[in-house]
Image 1 (tube, helix red, strand yellow):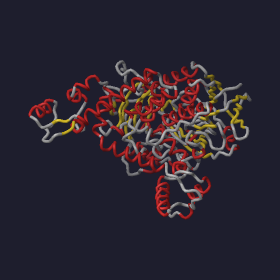
Image 2 (tube, helix red, strand yellow; image 1 turned 180 degrees about the vertical axis):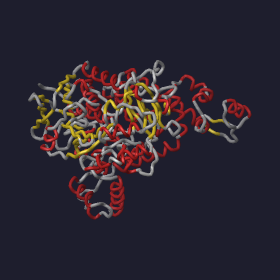
Image 3 (cartoon, helix red, strand yellow; image 1 turned 135 degrees about the vertical axis):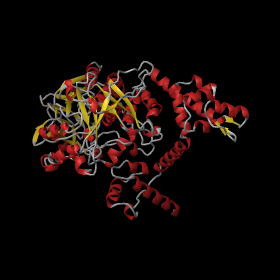
Image 4 (cartoon, one colour; image 1 turned 180 degrees about the horizontal axis):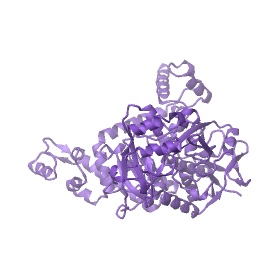
Length: 622
């Protein structure tokens, strides 16, 4: 059976990869171990969060599916860091995890150009270091020029609950055991990572009156730019906040000797920024308590997910520590928490197009690349799918720069630096985060999605109009001045703004701390015909004008530096400050430009700066 693209794995990366391939006209096959679990949210029932929300918005702006699915199945919406600047705010939504899975599964099964096979991929077939197909556990041979691996936690997945171990990719699902061996035989470097999940509690057994209620936002904002804001009115359920206490910590500490994390039973490295509760207690013994977020898993709210209580402790210990928490004294555990370790491919084995360097036509996306999180997976799956199709069409790969998108930061970090622990996206990883806000993801990326054929004409026109209104509005603010006349002072007072004593452009007025949309409408008639989204952008851009211009200058400087040519036959070993490892790589690949050097895995920004300075000195001596 012949296909253009084969996607292995039906998780968040696999869905985006398969859908984009099919939508761009390629005959696509999705191979998944259990078709019923396509789109399953294996861990927490939520999409987004700090920096992760940026990724979902970017996936949506490019034409991906995660944002739309979230808006269809969301049961609570919150903007995190709402009181802080727009660059570090993050959208997060609780979802009905059952409805999300069913929606995504049905979408995949009903998509044109897309077939689904419920099988286990076991061997990658190659010829002359080029993929030609896949062999499954049923000995079916599927042939394709492009294969995208999105295996999640299934590569030799091993679950731990206390001393109990079970080979599985997820509870109740078979692991992919032989595919790891196939990847190793192709010369790819594999490692071992660990992640985990928490106990799920029967809602009837929780006393919510002892917990702090955490409602959703009063005016929820949809995730997708394509969702109609006017009609968006989801039924929201509350979450709750509980806390561990000294008794909880004592129970956990008293069972460290039974914790797989500490006994040596688990080999893989876990996520530093999302540790298990036993790891938290071990590392932060000075803390009197830790937050627990009690979150509904479905609209029916029959089970609650205890976010912050990820664990692989034995079942009796899990029950005791849950019972020690106020409000859960009589809690019944429906599903016990567990740790899972799995194989992953060192992402430095990949190009920026997410294609393996050693095997042409083989792409990797999601947790197989060492990341953690649904959002990171979806972003990589979308990009891998796009680049597989572009390669089939003999077109240049689609690569987003660090100054263009969080997706660009994510992929650049992975393929140039690699990772020894599960990689999670943070706003701090993005050097140009003031330019890469959630609210302008459509302005940044929808033109790319439209050009690729993933965004429709109507959506694109809406973004073009928003961009035009933003440019008109900002130009008007900078070109229009107020003098401290009596009339102007009275006008400013009427809209709740302080008086001025000198001639000032309107941009300076809008940049004031308390200036808002209502005041903008009163400032000039031009703004009354603008969309709310455009006006919101105008205010943000006006408030942060100086910082935005500074970041743009930094980007221009970086672009100029990257175009610098490296003199041929340069002796890299003579350059002081470069490590032996970096010298070895530069000598091996002999990059013609600094940009080409930056594409080599392990070449750090600091090394590029040193190289740039040396080239300048070299050129002066000529």
